[in-house]
Image 1 (cartoon, rainbow, N blue to C red):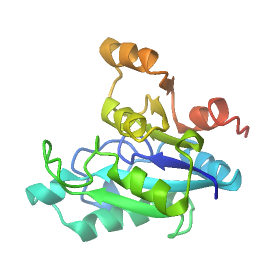
Image 2 (image 1 turned 135 degrees about the vertical axis):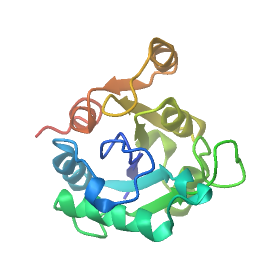
Image 3 (image 1 turned 30 degrees about the horizontal axis):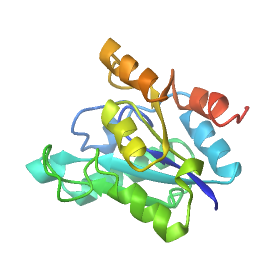
Image 4 (image 1 turned 90 degrees about the vertical axis):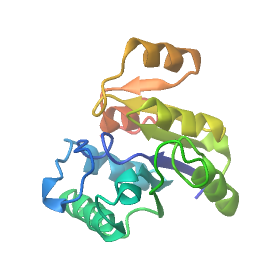
Length: 181
């Protein structure tokens, strides 16, 4: 593996349910499972980096998040070990001691461990904090419009930072990675 895609979960891979605890509440996004397979088959490492402050707030626990991740993979027909690694950041907003995005600690550590070039890596999410994470790690970044609405301020920041914006993950795979269906 020489290149990788780091992905946000809520709003990027599945609909954002706000403090998702119950795997039965997961809503898939059309085409995401197929896009993930195309990314993997093109030789990219695939990593998940998700902020889950609901753990830190006591709304749910690590197992709830793990079960939701496994259910998501099941709904997309993907193997349970699909992701090369998963980073679940339980910290509350404002806590800069761990892995909570916009910290790029997970990306930086992973690229170092696997000897990946940041120029060959992407961070994809639905919020500016996701793009900021990738940019601070020296990676390219992209936003998808399947989660939080992207306002004019974020569009301006994205344009100034060369962050691409796509309707969804399948469009990102086709347009930014040149992976056709």
